[in-house]
Length: 123
Image (cartoon, rainbow, N blue to C red):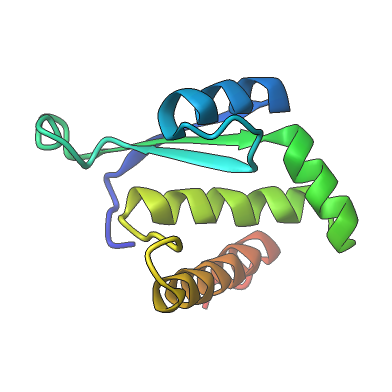
């Protein structure tokens, strides 16, 4: 993402906590799989430009979604983390179907890179 000095925090929570955050910040009173809170937006965005923001993942929802999809929880949580990070960089799948496709393709590309790094294939 061309941000070698970037920093972010990752928080793993249960459905109850992510529902509270979703209600408070998005006005949606339900659990979700991932939330992102960008530090690159707003009037103080330039105070610490290396701070990207926070990614919050519900372990409960991630586990349920992984089971339903027949994939490992770890693989799905990696996907959700990448998805959340893309939100920190301004990607937004809710803008349009084109934006959703772009975000999905970028997530796939980055997931393949992570998989390659984890397997020792540093191409």
